[in-house]
Image (cartoon, rainbow, N blue to C red; front, top):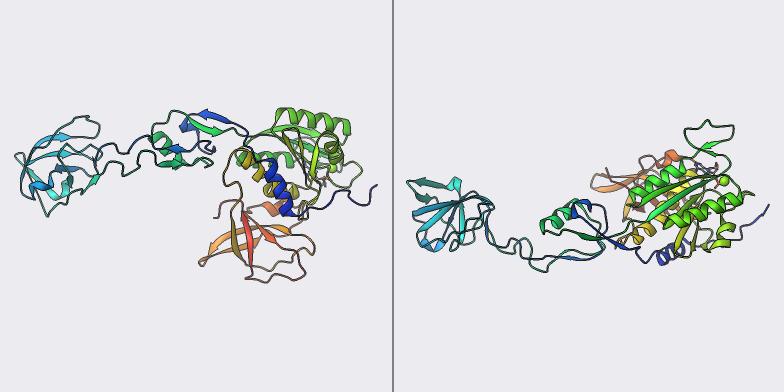
Length: 406
Ligand code: AMP
Ligand code: MG
């Protein structure tokens, strides 16, 4: 049995740099209908194809008038409803009834809301006075021809779907979603619905990782469980690398006599790092095999998910063209004291919430790397620098926001 890892320990920043370098080029572009595009990343900047609205429109139900006629009575000559398609010109002294969204008749420069008006025998009068442009949506006031509507690299939101359909785009260019295959390894690892033998563990990593992959906007594929057999793991890894853009394994990356993943990847590809100075997830590795990217995550359930969040997710987001692939970072105030790890930065799971005008964080309890309950309800990873001194209640620490703040 080896006593010391052959892999140099890289710093978090170095590992993140490697990951960023190997995921720099998005995978490809496809054209899809805008109403199916929510959550996808836009591959081409979308410009406004025309002024919107294309003609001045009424913003109220009421009457379209010419303000140059003054505020006295005028004659009502027609009714314009939204979508009627009618084009009318107002001569001096004339007005039309008009409904919200209908284009103003030619010559009109304002609308007056019905609540301010009386119409008797086709003669309109109103209270007060009306300024030119009142209750009118001018040409191009929502967007101007060639305005940037959505820049490339944006993740398409509900509002963006509204914009894309509003401007009448029939197809939109988005980046292809990475296909990510997940393989669990371990002689002790079983399907969750199998009978668990003595010393067995249920495979939670594969399912949790697949859920995280989908939540990151990618397509997840299961490669099942590989027993700790080098030839079998090699076959499964090769299979994963042919069918997916990214392969993630869990387990088999530590110092055990049955930890084969790192030697295997050294044989079939290039290992970029084999250990990271961070907690939990020190044995995390990253390799490339040709164009494919591979992450070997540790078997401990918390380590695999935290490593995924910190190192894999940004890579997946970059591969899908996201211009802002990293999670946001904020300062939070501790509601309880924290003991740092003496030698490595630690990413502690925490619940961040808004309280008394600031963001506060409470940890999710014992931070053991096998204790999946420490992920429960966590919406943040507190980045705790290594050190000897306890961080007191009220200290400010940096947090990666990984879920909704509730
Ligand atoms: P390993 O990284 O293979 O040494 O595994 C570290 C720990 O994680 C061991 O206690 C394993 O039993 C556990 N483990 C490995 N794979 C899984 C998995 N897929 N799901 C849950 N626990 C696992
Ligand atoms: Mg193992």
